[in-house]
Image (cartoon, rainbow, N blue to C red; front, side):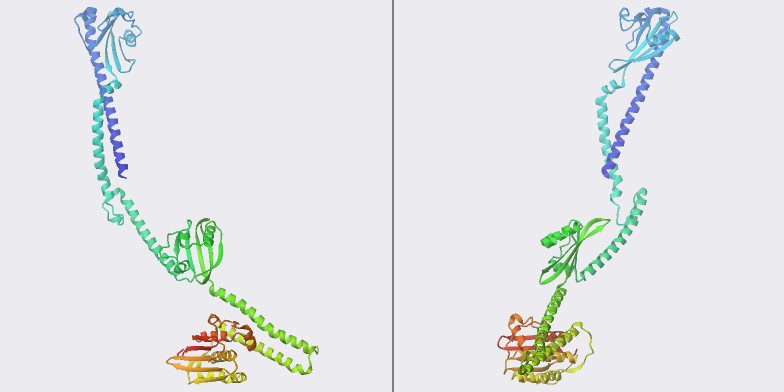
Amino acid sequence: MSKKIFRSIMTVAILVLLSGSLIAGGFLYNYFSDTLVSQMKSELSLLSDKVDSMGAAYFDYYDSSVYRFTLIDTDGKVLYDTRADAGTMENHLEREEIARAAKTGYGSSKRYSKTLTQRTFYEAKRLSDGKILRVSVSQVTVVALMMGVAPALAAVVAVSVALALFLSDRMTKTIVRPLNRLDLEHPTENDCYEEIAPILTKLNKQHRQIDRQMKELKRKSDEFVQITDSMSEGLVLLDKDGKILSINNRAKDIFKASDDAVGRQFITVYRSLEMNTAVENALCGTHSEYRRQQNGREYRFYINCIKSDDAIIGAVIMCLDVTEQAFAERNRREFTANVSHELKTPLQTIVGSAELLENNMVKSEDVPRFLGSIKSEATRMVRLINDIIRLSQLDEGAELPSEEVDLYSVAKEAVDTLKESAEKKNISIDLSGDECKMNGIQRYLYEIAYNLCDNAIRYTDRGGKVAVAVKRDGDTATLTVSDNGIGIPPEHQSRIFERFYRVDKSHSRQTGGTGLGLSIVKHAVAYHNGKIKIDSAPGKGTTITVTFKTDR
């Protein structure tokens, strides 16, 4: 702004200087020209009377270094000239001033030299005898005058420009100083030019409006950050160049991004060819979706473009943790396959035995054996179906009314029920402990004790031992089932509570288990917010400890 004001003032000053000089020079030049012509007329009037009475002889007594006089006869012949030889001069009858003087008695004209550096004025008067007396004087033209005074004029211009520069600079600083001191944060508190008061008032209104908008924008930004940071899904917003505009905490964990990720290229934060290709496609308007396992979890990524007025302005990346869903789907498929297999095997045995009996292909002494096989497999199917029903009820997580239950009494009931099956294998099963009351679901607690004891009996060789203990320690109730059976290898211990999972499938088939007992135990314990601990080694037996809070 200062430069514009300075240039404007300088331009105006120079234009005023030039135009003033030209106008003044023109006026002065015209004034001197008119004065010169007036003096010529006076001189001509004085000499005409003398020449009219004395003729050309008068000039013998007249000497003028300023004016040139010429006497012309009535036929245009030059009779006398004060500056030249009259005999060598051409006829002047056709000259403008001579012709006009011959006709009207007085004539005047002016003519320029060939170089335009000189202008000559002519004044002519007709004498009483018809002759014409002419006076002339030469004057330099404006061009010649400017050339003559050029050095002086240049000095004047230089001084004037220097003075204009100095004054323009001072004036510019004087004008701009109040503007530079303006407090734009508080426009109405400035003491400045009246001309900019409306601008300051409008600026103050805009300040207030911007402040309101900034506060609203910050509030919405804070809300957006709080909402996105509380999301369980990862969310990343990118601009049209692939730079991160926003990334919530969940996305930082998924992509291992630092807190300074905003403003960086996403490709430098998460180096994945598949993801980078998806982002590039999204910025071109193509939706992308894929699943990927990382950090021990499984994620589904959705990458879409963001449009405004049909123009792509960025992309959004949504990350969903589908680990539990994938695990549930896998369990469902495995559960369906296992149930089908577990039901198909006894059904095939039943159908096969029934067909043999139906077709009288079984000896009479073998009929009881086949009927026993049918009954055994049918019983196994009933147990399997009952286990599936109980497991489904636990999966549904329906809230059941709790009551005060004596964990020792529940364990004793389970031990008494299984004593017969233990005696068949010559396995001793003993219960120790005291009364231990807690809040819970008696049926679920019985399922825990029964399945743990039943599992211990199944996987303990003949003549083995199973020990069941119930103990209270402060506000904690503990149920422990120990055996000296075949034990569980370490690599299988984390999976024995999965549905239909068996360490030794051939041995499990012989024992007749459904493969759902320990899974029921796991869900029932979880329902009571309890904990399960397993301690086992191959050939040394297994100890499973279940812990409950008695103040539940």
